[in-house]
View 1 (tube, rainbow, N blue to C red):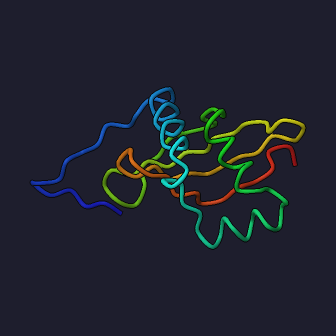
View 2: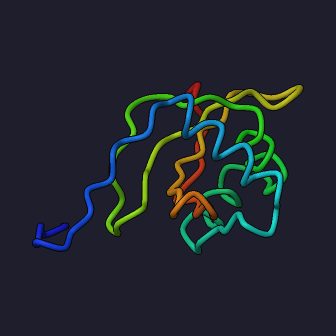
Length: 111
């Protein structure tokens, strides 16, 4: 949890449109999208590929609320989108300082 100090800078929550634009731009630079062990396990269990998840990040939309991450400059949200010939996928992301994406988990949205 963040603690406020005299030197703390408070980030203003980005709009859904703004964070969506940021996520799409970062996803174009594939090397700036990181998958942790949890998201990799879930992708394997659910038959969702890295390519599927990145495509959702590039073309999907913000679904739900945008919340601050654990660190200053982080924002967490879910991006959902339908992969061609497939079902709708949700990709829970943490955007860090508008420069990289950490994929927290992936899931099927229609279950």
